[in-house]
Image (cartoon, helix red, strand yellow):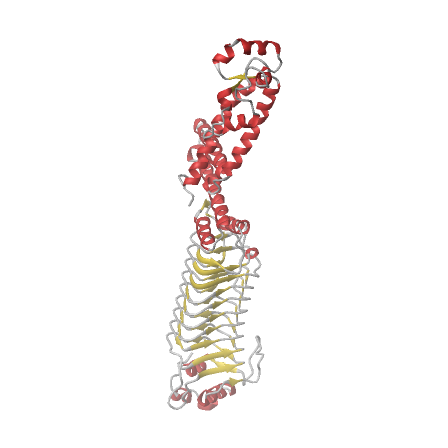
Length: 522
């Protein structure tokens, strides 16, 4: 491609006769400061272009650069509609003169603007084989609305002071990157709404000063080991808008990303391990569900990376929910985190390196350790105090234990298997007389007019509470004891009372530890 920098270069190639009708119109309109509108607003994608539609890439480059003294482009810059650009358009390291506006154009070759500088770049409704703006600088907006690119579109390292708009753009490359905007810096918002991409869209390490709008986008990259949307370490000052999206079958990577507000549609996130949220942070959740059930389901899709559980998404979500005033939801999220942490710990024990050999002793030891951990560090903490996040659940457990202890206490008393818990009384003639002639001497002993009427009367509910709650003394266990020789209920209660006492101590201790914060909750 000849490099045209002066009018003499055009004259050496044939002067005005060398220019096509479209090229002559372009230069004339640029000198007059108006848009060049070519006759065919719907350019043909195939076949040779008409003379009044074809613009060679070297002529367009000459106009974008500002022309020369003989053909000076006005400060407004270049604006052309409906052109068929022939050849490779190489704007590398070029400084555009004024705005560069290309609408409804078809580029037969690559559009290359590596390290170029533009005041404004608009390429709406145009078609490219490939687009390369690596390291380019756009002092205004970069508008790529409704474009179609069959190859890779690269904007890595570009700087756009205004808005980067790819509304309804189509990136048709089938593998690798369809749109590579890694490390791009955008002063305003990035719009990917209604975008269609058949391969990866990457904003890795991008800095965005406004919103990142992905609503209605179609990320069609295939394969669970492929990325559909890569936002690793992206920084978005305002909001991430993610909704009305068919869940990508490939991966969405938000690791170590930060956004201001998270406004999402939970149905639009991928499932099956295709979402990565480790290190993802946000200041608040806006115009989106905040209930624990919905958010835990969302975190469940993205809390693992390479098979390893990552607790950070749960911890951070709980912090955000608490700051937003949703304390109950925050506690539910933290409880789920603890459940998954303990599950991951047991999985680690069960899949230790020793199990890969034939050391069956290690296998059995690991199984026993995992079982003990499951019972005492998981089930017990979960049911009694919700891993410390629901401490008053211990009161419910205590009530259930009291109800359970009431049953054997009731039947043991009814069958006459209770006796006063006092040695002198048991050895007294009055008690011996009642024990020898009554089927239920304890009931007769405390009846009106009986010798024990001034003794503590038996109450099955108070007795059960005395067994279970160690810090409460209702006097029942001190006054009455089950007998092991009068009936089966008394015999069973004799042994069960130690179980109830022990369980009561454990539940009470865990509840007190959770309430006072001894069990760490954050």
